[in-house]
Image (cartoon, rainbow, N blue to C red; front, side):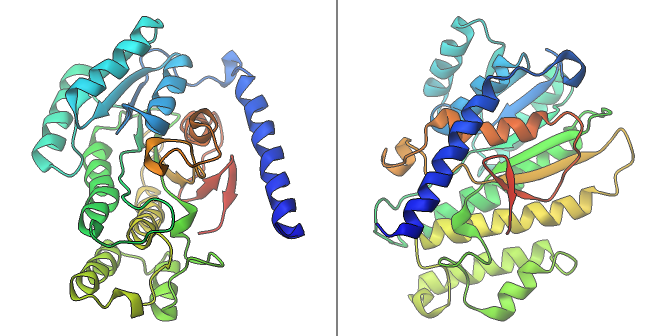
Length: 314
Protein backbone atom coordinates (compact mmCIF):
# COMPACT_ATOMS: atom_id res chain seq x y z
CA UNK A 1 0.00 0.00 0.00
CA UNK A 2 1.43 3.38 -0.93
CA UNK A 3 2.24 6.07 1.61
CA UNK A 4 -0.74 8.26 0.71
CA UNK A 5 -3.25 5.44 1.17
CA UNK A 6 -1.61 4.46 4.44
CA UNK A 7 -1.93 8.05 5.70
CA UNK A 8 -5.59 8.27 4.67
CA UNK A 9 -6.32 5.00 6.42
CA UNK A 10 -4.65 6.22 9.61
CA UNK A 11 -6.66 9.42 9.47
CA UNK A 12 -9.93 7.53 9.05
CA UNK A 13 -9.05 5.21 11.91
CA UNK A 14 -8.28 8.15 14.18
CA UNK A 15 -11.57 9.82 13.24
CA UNK A 16 -13.47 6.62 14.02
CA UNK A 17 -11.88 6.42 17.45
CA UNK A 18 -12.81 10.05 18.11
CA UNK A 19 -16.40 9.29 17.15
CA UNK A 20 -16.61 6.19 19.34
CA UNK A 21 -15.56 8.46 22.19
CA UNK A 22 -18.01 11.23 21.26
CA UNK A 23 -20.78 8.66 21.22
CA UNK A 24 -20.20 7.85 24.90
CA UNK A 25 -20.77 11.46 26.00
CA UNK A 26 -24.40 11.83 27.03
CA UNK A 27 -26.47 14.84 25.95
CA UNK A 28 -26.93 17.26 28.84
CA UNK A 29 -30.53 18.01 29.81
CA UNK A 30 -30.54 21.55 28.46
CA UNK A 31 -29.40 20.31 25.04
CA UNK A 32 -32.04 17.61 24.82
CA UNK A 33 -34.88 18.98 22.73
CA UNK A 34 -36.59 15.58 22.59
CA UNK A 35 -38.54 13.47 25.08
CA UNK A 36 -40.07 10.01 25.23
CA UNK A 37 -42.94 11.42 23.15
CA UNK A 38 -40.62 12.26 20.25
CA UNK A 39 -41.30 9.80 17.43
CA UNK A 40 -38.54 8.60 15.10
CA UNK A 41 -39.31 6.34 12.14
CA UNK A 42 -36.44 4.20 10.81
CA UNK A 43 -37.03 2.33 7.54
CA UNK A 44 -35.45 -1.04 6.74
CA UNK A 45 -34.38 -1.38 10.35
CA UNK A 46 -34.60 -5.12 10.98
CA UNK A 47 -30.82 -5.52 10.65
CA UNK A 48 -27.53 -3.77 9.90
CA UNK A 49 -27.20 0.00 10.05
CA UNK A 50 -30.97 0.56 10.31
CA UNK A 51 -31.20 -1.67 13.37
CA UNK A 52 -28.31 0.22 14.99
CA UNK A 53 -29.83 3.64 14.24
CA UNK A 54 -33.13 2.53 15.76
CA UNK A 55 -31.31 1.09 18.77
CA UNK A 56 -29.26 4.23 19.42
CA UNK A 57 -32.24 6.59 19.04
CA UNK A 58 -34.29 4.43 21.41
CA UNK A 59 -31.36 4.40 23.87
CA UNK A 60 -31.52 8.22 23.90
CA UNK A 61 -35.08 7.88 25.19
CA UNK A 62 -37.13 8.48 22.04
CA UNK A 63 -40.06 6.44 20.81
CA UNK A 64 -38.84 4.56 17.76
CA UNK A 65 -40.95 2.99 15.02
CA UNK A 66 -38.93 0.26 13.32
CA UNK A 67 -40.14 -0.75 9.87
CA UNK A 68 -39.17 -3.57 7.56
CA UNK A 69 -40.62 -5.24 4.50
CA UNK A 70 -40.98 -8.62 6.16
CA UNK A 71 -43.10 -8.69 9.29
CA UNK A 72 -41.44 -11.68 10.99
CA UNK A 73 -37.89 -10.32 11.04
CA UNK A 74 -39.10 -6.84 11.98
CA UNK A 75 -41.06 -8.12 14.95
CA UNK A 76 -38.05 -10.15 16.10
CA UNK A 77 -35.82 -7.07 15.94
CA UNK A 78 -38.33 -5.07 17.97
CA UNK A 79 -38.59 -7.82 20.60
CA UNK A 80 -34.83 -7.68 21.13
CA UNK A 81 -35.01 -3.95 21.86
CA UNK A 82 -38.16 -4.14 23.98
CA UNK A 83 -36.54 -6.79 26.15
CA UNK A 84 -33.80 -4.22 26.78
CA UNK A 85 -36.43 -1.82 28.08
CA UNK A 86 -36.50 0.39 24.98
CA UNK A 87 -39.61 2.02 23.59
CA UNK A 88 -39.79 0.56 20.09
CA UNK A 89 -42.83 -0.32 17.98
CA UNK A 90 -43.01 -2.24 14.70
CA UNK A 91 -44.94 -1.62 11.50
CA UNK A 92 -44.60 -3.35 8.15
CA UNK A 93 -43.51 -1.07 5.32
CA UNK A 94 -42.37 -1.53 1.75
CA UNK A 95 -41.20 1.88 0.54
CA UNK A 96 -41.66 0.91 -3.12
CA UNK A 97 -45.31 -0.09 -2.64
CA UNK A 98 -47.60 2.97 -2.61
CA UNK A 99 -50.39 1.10 -0.80
CA UNK A 100 -47.94 0.06 1.92
CA UNK A 101 -46.66 3.64 2.32
CA UNK A 102 -50.25 4.88 2.52
CA UNK A 103 -51.22 2.28 5.13
CA UNK A 104 -48.17 3.22 7.16
CA UNK A 105 -48.98 6.94 6.91
CA UNK A 106 -52.53 6.35 8.17
CA UNK A 107 -51.25 4.23 11.04
CA UNK A 108 -48.58 6.69 12.19
CA UNK A 109 -51.13 9.52 12.08
CA UNK A 110 -53.68 7.53 14.06
CA UNK A 111 -51.21 6.13 16.60
CA UNK A 112 -48.94 9.11 17.26
CA UNK A 113 -50.50 12.04 15.46
CA UNK A 114 -47.44 12.18 13.20
CA UNK A 115 -43.67 11.92 13.59
CA UNK A 116 -40.65 14.12 14.37
CA UNK A 117 -37.74 12.27 12.77
CA UNK A 118 -37.53 10.18 9.61
CA UNK A 119 -34.47 8.06 8.86
CA UNK A 120 -34.52 6.81 5.27
CA UNK A 121 -32.33 3.77 5.66
CA UNK A 122 -34.14 1.14 3.55
CA UNK A 123 -32.12 0.33 0.45
CA UNK A 124 -30.78 -2.51 -1.63
CA UNK A 125 -27.55 -3.44 -3.37
CA UNK A 126 -26.84 -6.59 -5.34
CA UNK A 127 -23.21 -6.28 -6.34
CA UNK A 128 -20.57 -7.76 -4.09
CA UNK A 129 -16.82 -7.44 -4.53
CA UNK A 130 -15.76 -6.28 -7.96
CA UNK A 131 -18.77 -7.44 -9.97
CA UNK A 132 -20.79 -4.71 -11.64
CA UNK A 133 -23.84 -6.41 -13.05
CA UNK A 134 -26.89 -4.37 -14.14
CA UNK A 135 -29.28 -7.27 -13.71
CA UNK A 136 -31.09 -5.59 -10.79
CA UNK A 137 -30.66 -1.95 -11.84
CA UNK A 138 -34.43 -1.35 -12.01
CA UNK A 139 -34.95 -2.63 -8.45
CA UNK A 140 -31.99 -0.66 -7.10
CA UNK A 141 -33.19 2.65 -8.59
CA UNK A 142 -36.84 1.98 -7.67
CA UNK A 143 -35.96 1.22 -4.06
CA UNK A 144 -33.05 3.49 -3.25
CA UNK A 145 -34.26 6.58 -5.06
CA UNK A 146 -37.98 6.37 -5.85
CA UNK A 147 -38.75 4.52 -2.60
CA UNK A 148 -36.84 7.07 -0.52
CA UNK A 149 -38.69 9.83 -2.35
CA UNK A 150 -42.11 8.18 -1.81
CA UNK A 151 -41.42 7.92 1.87
CA UNK A 152 -40.12 11.47 2.25
CA UNK A 153 -43.10 12.93 0.38
CA UNK A 154 -45.54 10.89 2.45
CA UNK A 155 -43.98 11.84 5.80
CA UNK A 156 -43.41 15.59 5.29
CA UNK A 157 -47.12 16.46 5.79
CA UNK A 158 -47.12 14.31 8.95
CA UNK A 159 -44.10 15.97 10.59
CA UNK A 160 -45.30 17.45 13.86
CA UNK A 161 -44.67 21.16 14.39
CA UNK A 162 -41.97 21.94 16.96
CA UNK A 163 -39.45 24.68 17.77
CA UNK A 164 -36.63 22.22 17.06
CA UNK A 165 -37.95 21.34 13.62
CA UNK A 166 -38.60 17.99 11.98
CA UNK A 167 -35.54 16.01 10.94
CA UNK A 168 -35.04 13.83 7.86
CA UNK A 169 -31.81 11.89 7.36
CA UNK A 170 -31.18 9.68 4.34
CA UNK A 171 -28.48 7.03 4.33
CA UNK A 172 -26.48 7.58 1.16
CA UNK A 173 -22.99 6.86 -0.12
CA UNK A 174 -19.81 8.56 -1.22
CA UNK A 175 -20.11 6.35 -4.31
CA UNK A 176 -22.79 8.78 -5.48
CA UNK A 177 -20.64 11.89 -5.33
CA UNK A 178 -20.82 14.23 -8.30
CA UNK A 179 -17.20 15.20 -8.00
CA UNK A 180 -15.56 12.17 -6.49
CA UNK A 181 -12.14 11.60 -8.01
CA UNK A 182 -12.99 8.11 -9.19
CA UNK A 183 -16.65 7.37 -9.44
CA UNK A 184 -18.21 10.41 -11.01
CA UNK A 185 -20.47 11.07 -13.97
CA UNK A 186 -18.22 12.03 -16.86
CA UNK A 187 -20.98 13.87 -18.76
CA UNK A 188 -19.99 17.42 -17.80
CA UNK A 189 -23.29 19.08 -18.80
CA UNK A 190 -25.32 16.67 -16.73
CA UNK A 191 -22.93 17.01 -13.83
CA UNK A 192 -23.22 20.81 -13.90
CA UNK A 193 -27.02 20.62 -14.02
CA UNK A 194 -27.12 18.30 -11.01
CA UNK A 195 -24.60 20.48 -9.20
CA UNK A 196 -26.50 23.74 -9.55
CA UNK A 197 -28.95 23.71 -6.67
CA UNK A 198 -30.98 26.61 -8.11
CA UNK A 199 -31.82 24.84 -11.35
CA UNK A 200 -32.19 21.43 -9.71
CA UNK A 201 -35.66 19.92 -10.15
CA UNK A 202 -37.36 16.63 -9.40
CA UNK A 203 -37.93 16.23 -13.11
CA UNK A 204 -34.20 16.53 -13.85
CA UNK A 205 -33.31 13.90 -11.22
CA UNK A 206 -36.09 11.55 -12.37
CA UNK A 207 -35.08 11.98 -16.01
CA UNK A 208 -31.44 11.26 -15.15
CA UNK A 209 -32.18 7.92 -13.47
CA UNK A 210 -34.77 6.97 -16.11
CA UNK A 211 -32.29 7.73 -18.90
CA UNK A 212 -29.77 5.52 -17.09
CA UNK A 213 -32.33 2.68 -16.89
CA UNK A 214 -33.12 3.08 -20.59
CA UNK A 215 -29.43 2.71 -21.42
CA UNK A 216 -29.26 -0.37 -19.20
CA UNK A 217 -32.16 -1.92 -21.16
CA UNK A 218 -30.46 -1.07 -24.45
CA UNK A 219 -27.10 -2.30 -23.21
CA UNK A 220 -25.44 1.06 -23.91
CA UNK A 221 -24.88 2.25 -20.33
CA UNK A 222 -21.13 1.53 -20.39
CA UNK A 223 -20.52 4.35 -22.84
CA UNK A 224 -23.00 6.62 -21.03
CA UNK A 225 -20.39 8.17 -18.75
CA UNK A 226 -21.92 6.76 -15.55
CA UNK A 227 -19.92 5.86 -12.42
CA UNK A 228 -17.73 2.82 -13.03
CA UNK A 229 -18.07 1.04 -9.69
CA UNK A 230 -21.36 -0.44 -8.39
CA UNK A 231 -22.93 1.64 -11.15
CA UNK A 232 -26.65 1.14 -10.41
CA UNK A 233 -26.16 1.66 -6.67
CA UNK A 234 -23.97 4.74 -7.25
CA UNK A 235 -26.54 6.32 -9.59
CA UNK A 236 -29.32 5.64 -7.07
CA UNK A 237 -27.36 7.37 -4.30
CA UNK A 238 -26.35 10.23 -6.56
CA UNK A 239 -30.09 10.77 -7.06
CA UNK A 240 -30.76 10.63 -3.30
CA UNK A 241 -28.04 13.24 -2.72
CA UNK A 242 -29.45 15.56 -5.39
CA UNK A 243 -32.98 15.08 -4.05
CA UNK A 244 -31.77 15.97 -0.53
CA UNK A 245 -30.44 19.31 -1.76
CA UNK A 246 -33.58 19.98 -3.76
CA UNK A 247 -35.85 19.24 -0.78
CA UNK A 248 -33.75 21.40 1.53
CA UNK A 249 -34.30 24.30 -0.87
CA UNK A 250 -38.06 23.64 -1.04
CA UNK A 251 -38.43 23.20 2.72
CA UNK A 252 -36.42 26.23 3.76
CA UNK A 253 -39.42 28.55 3.26
CA UNK A 254 -41.45 26.90 5.99
CA UNK A 255 -42.40 29.20 8.88
CA UNK A 256 -40.80 29.03 12.35
CA UNK A 257 -42.17 26.16 14.38
CA UNK A 258 -42.84 24.19 11.18
CA UNK A 259 -39.26 23.87 9.97
CA UNK A 260 -37.99 20.59 8.53
CA UNK A 261 -34.27 19.93 8.08
CA UNK A 262 -33.11 17.29 5.61
CA UNK A 263 -29.59 15.87 5.24
CA UNK A 264 -27.89 12.77 3.86
CA UNK A 265 -24.76 10.94 4.94
CA UNK A 266 -22.34 8.20 4.01
CA UNK A 267 -21.93 5.52 6.69
CA UNK A 268 -18.77 4.15 5.08
CA UNK A 269 -18.03 0.57 4.09
CA UNK A 270 -19.84 -1.30 6.84
CA UNK A 271 -19.67 -4.90 8.02
CA UNK A 272 -23.26 -5.91 7.21
CA UNK A 273 -25.09 -8.45 5.09
CA UNK A 274 -25.29 -5.82 2.32
CA UNK A 275 -21.52 -5.71 1.84
CA UNK A 276 -21.23 -9.47 2.29
CA UNK A 277 -19.61 -8.67 5.67
CA UNK A 278 -16.59 -7.27 3.88
CA UNK A 279 -16.73 -3.80 5.41
CA UNK A 280 -14.30 -2.41 7.94
CA UNK A 281 -16.69 -0.24 9.97
CA UNK A 282 -18.96 -1.55 12.70
CA UNK A 283 -22.72 -0.89 12.37
CA UNK A 284 -22.48 1.05 15.67
CA UNK A 285 -19.98 3.50 14.18
CA UNK A 286 -21.89 3.58 10.89
CA UNK A 287 -25.14 4.59 12.59
CA UNK A 288 -23.56 7.41 14.56
CA UNK A 289 -23.77 10.27 12.05
CA UNK A 290 -27.46 9.57 11.36
CA UNK A 291 -28.27 9.67 15.07
CA UNK A 292 -26.13 12.77 15.60
CA UNK A 293 -27.86 14.62 12.72
CA UNK A 294 -31.29 13.55 13.94
CA UNK A 295 -30.63 14.86 17.43
CA UNK A 296 -28.59 18.02 16.72
CA UNK A 297 -29.71 20.36 19.49
CA UNK A 298 -29.17 23.84 18.16
CA UNK A 299 -27.54 23.65 14.80
CA UNK A 300 -30.07 23.98 12.05
CA UNK A 301 -28.30 22.57 9.03
CA UNK A 302 -30.07 21.36 5.91
CA UNK A 303 -29.26 20.12 2.43
CA UNK A 304 -25.78 18.90 3.34
CA UNK A 305 -23.87 15.65 2.85
CA UNK A 306 -22.03 14.20 5.87
CA UNK A 307 -19.59 11.49 6.86
CA UNK A 308 -18.12 10.87 10.32
CA UNK A 309 -19.99 13.93 11.67
CA UNK A 310 -18.33 16.21 9.16
CA UNK A 311 -19.70 17.89 6.08
CA UNK A 312 -18.31 16.50 2.82
CA UNK A 313 -18.82 17.77 -0.73
CA UNK A 314 -21.49 16.42 -3.06
